[in-house]
Image 1 (cartoon, rainbow, N blue to C red):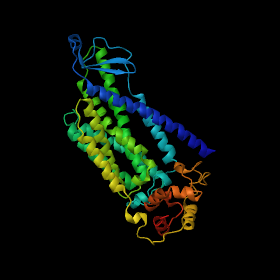
Image 2 (image 1 turned 180 degrees about the vertical axis):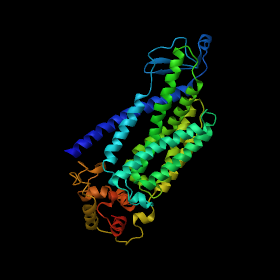
Image 3 (image 1 turned 180 degrees about the horizontal axis):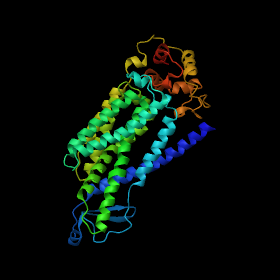
Length: 400
């Protein structure tokens, strides 16, 4: 019953997380599109009122006329629309999911027994949990300090972008060395998502509140508040697509279980940012196909890097390969404790990822995935069933 309750809460939290993320990302993309689509107001009276730009659009059977003021209008309304709860809900629900799915069983889901760093391979569960939390917090601190030190007045944002890109390469590398592959991809995405939510909480919303307060008092707002909010919003824009990719990556073991997983991760992060740049420029009336083309090129490079090698598919093994009885025996010995309709492992009320290996058809249907995660040593988790190298070679040589 406890495992069932955990699974049910997981379902509800995941649903909430997806709903909040869609709402937040959708609104963010809309406002970036709106900001980049503004044109100078045609009416003299609008310009006199302080209208900086306007956009006409059609949707849902009606017409919309959006206007952006460079300064406060003569009378600022009380019913301003604020965008922040979606960001907070996305992060809080995501963190709750991380606690339930990873931190409850850190020995299986966080500790990387194959880490090249001995101290990481020998971590206990609670040590892994502390390190994961420190990783999230440290990511935000480093990113925030880069923004404050490199471009505090938003006059060196180009250099800041390069520094943030280098930071993400370092984060990707460190995460894959310290944690299991699936956790590494998730934590790298969580570092970016934490920065996005923290940008809203610590910079964007407080700055906007100070601006509104000054305007209502008849004072001139500090222009740095608007510039800082814009800077962090731009960063959030380019984080969006990479974060979405990293959050769904746990369904695809071939990318997070590869020995060069951090390279694959970096390629996907940069590809997402380049594809997002295409849409940002398109909304500004500039079509630059080189950006998505280069992004697709990075994705193809990731495909090439992550492709299984000949040695991982058993091409050098005995031409006959193992028979069905051998494979079935190994699966029963090392996998069925979890991958069954009624798992023996106390942490599951259903087979992980929905994969049950209780008959030959089910096993055969997941042949490629089984070989990939066994060859990469991602499975069995934490090698809890003590699968030997010889047994892994048999799985690799499986050709049927």
